[in-house]
Amino acid sequence: MTNGSGSGPVGVALVGAGVISTQYLTALSTFPDVRVLAVADLDVERARAQAAAHGVPHAGDVASALAIPEVEIVVNLTIPAAHAEIASAALEAGKHVYGEKPLALAPSDGAKILAQAQSLGLRVGSAPDTFLGAGLQSAARAVASGLIGEPVSAVAVTQGPGPESWHPSPEFLFQYGAGPLFDIGPYYLTALVALFGPVVRVAASARQARTHRVIGSGPKAGTEFAVEVPTHVHALLDFAAGPSTSATFSFDSSVPRRMIEVTGTEGTLSLPDPNTFEGPLQIRGFGDEDWRDLPVEGTTAGRGIGVLDMARGIRSGAPHRASGELAQHVLELMATVTDSAERHGFVELESRAPEVETLPDDWDPVAATLT
Ligand SMILES: NC(=O)c1ccc[n+]([C@@H]2O[C@H](COP(=O)([O-])OP(=O)(O)OC[C@H]3O[C@@H](n4cnc5c(N)ncnc54)[C@H](O)[C@@H]3O)[C@@H](O)[C@H]2O)c1
Image 1: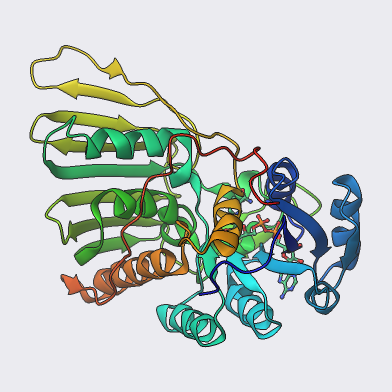
Image 2: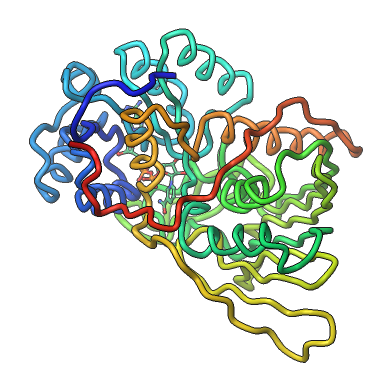
């Protein structure tokens, strides 16, 4: 890991100018400690349009972005099938890399990225960074302060009809490396691993309601495509620290529902949607007739705060929180859930997650701290 190198704001290149790039470009352009220098894509026109819309000086193909000496972090917003290839190319070019989830398609690919980065003295970061937002950070502080006593269990549910209705190119969301488990699961699983630490064993069951889906928006609306992964997954997760969790990830339900509840010996916390940076955060103790709101404090600056935390860590030498190691554990967890569903039995996990420190109370994304 590079420690305490360079000075001033950290140069960033985005690779992948698709749907999610707008959220990154919007947030990153408000952080004085990073400077977006380039947008790259296989579709160079798309890169040019996004760069022009957000005042980014360079647009082009991936090689041209990697050749810019001032670029220190490559933010990899390509589809999951390209995550490992782009991460590896960025590392090879001497850049730190922060990627969208999942870290890679398979744990073996994720491990290769981490090993390559380590051998080159570079950092790997990964989405999601929603667990650094105000809602989940407030939940982490509430759990750490003992508000619900000793954590015992959690229930996580994310279900709905699936993203093919609104995403203009949803095919990848139903291919290997996505589906509700790999696409939405990282938000829930990262939140739980950040709270409880690593998972040691899982059991799961999976189904697929439909073999084909139809694109609902954009130029390809009406096009049918094949579903390659399970679209309804139930998992039981045992955490090393003790808590046991049941989790449901589904694109097969007509009823949208997103919830995480964490129960301890003194009561239950209702966490916010872990795919957001905000609240609400609520508590209900034994004997309480209803939920009570808890204060939600921290940043709601959006996707990109994990990149900023990594940029500041590059300068200071401090570890960054949305780390490759955390993402690798979540990736192994998701692969093990898939494995368990195929084998119909409990499966043990090998990887361990790093402990994740909460952000300092005064962590401010729009403060200029790098001079
Ligand atoms: N869309 C969302 O709401 C959303 C939310 C959170 C996270 N994400 C994640 O962000 C990532 C991208 O999702 P998206 O919705 O923006 O996808 P998208 O299909 O809209 O955009 C992906 C872009 O990557 C480019 N690309 C693909 N392979 C490439 C390669 N080898 N080199 C250079 N460019 C390449 C494509 O041309 C495309 O412009 C995925 O990992 C997804 O899980 C998406």
